[in-house]
Length: 443
Image (cartoon, rainbow, N blue to C red; front, side, top):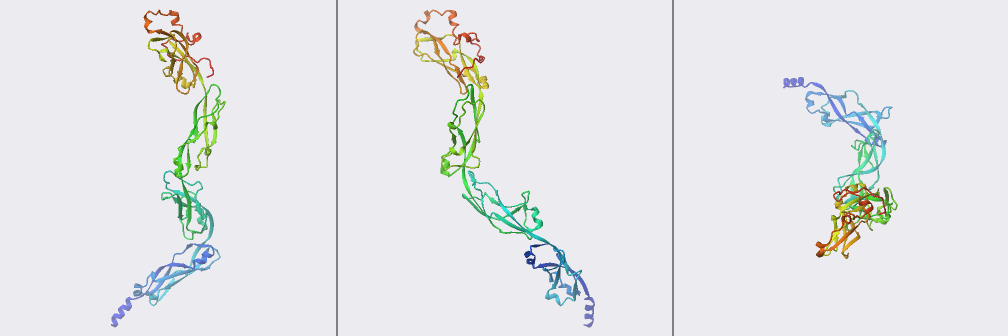
C-alpha cells in the first residue's frame, strides 16, 4: 500500500497548463446610454492554471468565466479604453486548482465608436406585376410613418443611401393594397445593406396603403377638320400623338367607352399652306365618371398639308359606260378619247393609271342624230380633285335603218374632241399615257 501510494504520488506531479477563456462584456447599457458602440474588443484572455496532472481531467476552459465590466474603463482616449477582466472558476474545480494567473495581464483594450442618428424619408419600391387592366392610383402610396430614424455607429452611415420598403404586386387580391413591411437599408447602387451590431430603427413596421384603378386603353379618333385650305393645297395625312390614351373608371362605365373623338369644329385649319399642329386637352372629350390616367392630358393633332399639282389624262371612249340606252338605237362617240384633268399630290398623280378613272354618260332622252356637249361624270379614288369636267358628242342612229344610213364625212368623224383647240393635236387613241399638266384652275 505504501509502495503503491508512493508510485501514484510520484506520477501525479504538479503541472501548469494554459487556457484561453472567452470574455463576456457586461453593462453594455452603460455605453448605449452614452451613445457609444463597442467597435473592437479582445475576445479571449489567457490564464495559466497550476494543478496536479490528475486534476486536469476535469479542469477545462469551459469551467472558467471571464467577465469585463464596460462601465469601469480607464484611459485618456475617449474611444480607446482598458477594461479589467475577472476570471472565475466553477465551484466544482475550485478545490482542484492549486493556483491560476493571467498570462499577461487582467486588463484588455477596447475601441469605442460614437453612435449617431439620422432621419430618412421612406421610399416605396414595387416587385412583381399587377393584374391586367389595373394601375396604381395616381395618388401613390400612403406611408405610415413617412420617415424613420436609424441609430448606428458613425462609420456605417457612409454606405447607407436610403431606406425603402418593397410592396409585392403579385400577391394583390383586391382593389386595395395594405401591407405591413420591414424597412430595408440600401446603398447608392441600390444594393441591400445588412443591419449590424449597434444598429436599430425607430420602428420595425411600416404601413403602406394604396388603391388600384381599373384602366382601359382607347384610341384617339379625329372626326375631320373645319375650314378651307389655301387654294391648291391638300391635307394628305392626319397624325395624333399619343394615338392611344389610358382612362380610369368603374368597370361598368369603362365598358361603354371604346374611343375618344375630337370633333372637327375644334380643328380649324383655315388657309393653311404648311403643316399645322393643334394641341388640345383630351379630358374635355371624355364622358362623365371617366378620367385620364397620368399627368399629361395634352394631345397633339398634326395636319400634313401639301401643295397639289395638275395633270391631264386621255381616256379612250371605250372606257365610257352609258346609262339610259334604248334597245333599238345605236350610239357612237364622236372622237376616240376624252381628256380628264385632275389635281392631286405629285406621287398620287404619277401612280394613277387611266384605267382607274371611271367615266359615265347618261344618254337617256337624247334624240337621233348628233348630240353634242353631253356631260361626262368622272369617278376616281379619293385624294384627287376634278379640275375640268369633260363633255362628249354622241351620234344616235336607229338600228332598223342603220345599214342604209350614210357614213359621216371623214373630216367629221376625226374632228370630235372635248377640247378641240388643244386636245385634237394630242396623242392618238393607242397612246394611253397622261398628258402634261395644263393651266391650273380652281377645283
